[in-house]
Image 1 (spheres, rainbow, N blue to C red):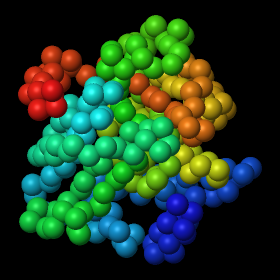
Image 2 (image 1 turned 120 degrees about the vertical axis):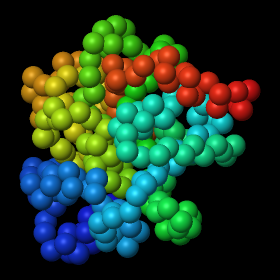
Image 3 (image 1 turned 180 degrees about the vertical axis):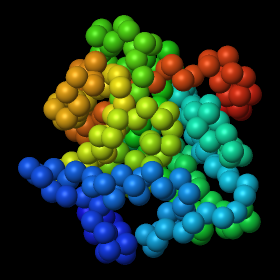
Length: 256
């Protein structure tokens, strides 16, 4: 990730991050890049190209293991976040990568008519689910302090790979009331973006509290997965369960 940042900064000849007290804080240019990225395609050679074609398309890869273990889908989030996109659902029997204790969810951005494997940018190791189903919340450790999660909105997220793209993705999913707090830590290159209220789990909670002050209303206890920090954020307010189930229900039948 450090090399990716260096290459991107060199390519656009503008610093994206500054080092401060052993942290990398995103610069104004970095914020602008994240904001502007909705109009660009981020390619494997780290170049940015303006998207000039329509329709736009997003492919969501659903895996059997993801469905059965977590019952957590992002199709409804995608529909709400990208109303001008067509949503393609790619079903896969492949197992996600649990090597770091997280679900491997692939979001493939690709050009219409282009070869998916060659031309698309594939965002893997998508570490944040923008919401968790009631079933997952009951299983998640421990949630005694989170009885009021339903009244909270999203706080932020942690992502270790493709953090610049992750920040763009996070920014676009949220409504306009985003608080401009974007932090990439030196040790893990995790992006944390904050809005008004929320709840989260993880050792990064201390970092969030440190920088967000009163903006964070709720922090859940830490949970580690195979020694790798998980920082879970929940946003249930955006989800219409009936609408979600009407979309996801037929797909789930394929897995049963």
